[in-house]
Amino acid sequence: MARLVMKFGGSSVADIDHIRNVARHVKREVDAGNEIAVVISAMAGATNTLVDLCRSAAPLHDRREYDAVVASGEQVTSGLLAIALQDLGIAARSWQGWQLPIKTTDAHGSARILDIDAEPLIRGFAAREVAVVAGFQGVHRGSGRITTLGRGGSDTSAVAVAAAIRAERCDIYTDVDGVHTADPRVVAKARRLDKIAFEEMLEMASLGAKIMQVRSIELGMVHNVRIFVRSSFDKPDEIDPRRAPPGTLICDESEIMEQEVVTGIAFSKDEAQISIRSVEDKPGIAAAIFGPLAEANINVDMIVQNVSADGKTTDLTFTVAAADFERAQDTIAKARPKIGYKRLDSASDVAKISVIGIGMRSHAGVAARAFRALADRGINIRAITTSEIKFSLLIDAAFTELAVRTLHSLYGLDKS
Image (cartoon, rainbow, N blue to C red):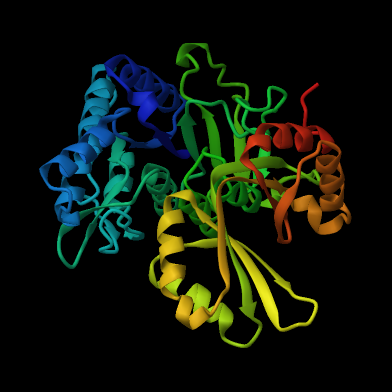
């Protein structure tokens, strides 16, 4: 007997038929003798509808009331799944974030989980009861107000619940059958990974892969919660319990015997580039540029600095999210008297391509091969950043798919 968390996203609970399918997945695990907590998202599209209602009521609305509204989507699905499980003869009850409670910070709309009282769930397990927990939400104990965790927050809820109840594994059921070496919609030869290390998955998620929320992977790594990504659209009755199901295990790198040099390729078109030309090269200039951006809550990613031949001036290039592009330009323009730059250049038609792999730690020349392969394809590299297990390249957005496919083949990731 094992203790498991099963998490189902919005597409998996899109309607009553889908919810019944989820109930059958849960029943399969219960029949195998496992203790189960299910973390559930709102029905597909429900959260967007609730967000639009808040905006229609008032464009500048109270974030506390916003959370009260958007958290209701998960309340509906948790109750419906409990009903569907009961209809299959399985004891089940729904839990809202405030009932356990799942304690969070008071950052409404993007709260962080501080603690979960797992005792009510564990008492339920002793009575052979399935716990159906509403994801994406919690409560701020000081104010007693409902909070939400931001987009993809149900993933974070699931991993946090798994850590709290000391689950053997947290199964993330989604609309894909695992984590792939690249986006299969872009790279037809992308293959599903059997295992991927926490660090690699964290890089892939933060650099463009949409499989899981970044914070959920951070939690898994900190608490060593093994996460298994698998498809919710497999028919429960056709799954052989004696065989490992198809999917990807996200785990500590010590569990991975053979580590590839490169594990995957991620990309993001949600990028914009800003270049500040002819800035005096003296102490304090970087602070004058990036201080105002930080105060405006604009995250800066890639940073490249080129000093002139005479050493008196420098050009400084960096990237921001496309959504922050105009605000970033406006912030830098307002700080111009303090920065003292000659010209501001910008571009929004750029993409970031990232190559990730723990094996890079012990192999030289991995990035150099990419530079040559892209040059042979006529793809210019605007900027480069590196870390211990990844490097990222900024290129013209028009070459995104070609670059991803080129690098995927270069590092031997294509399925045979």
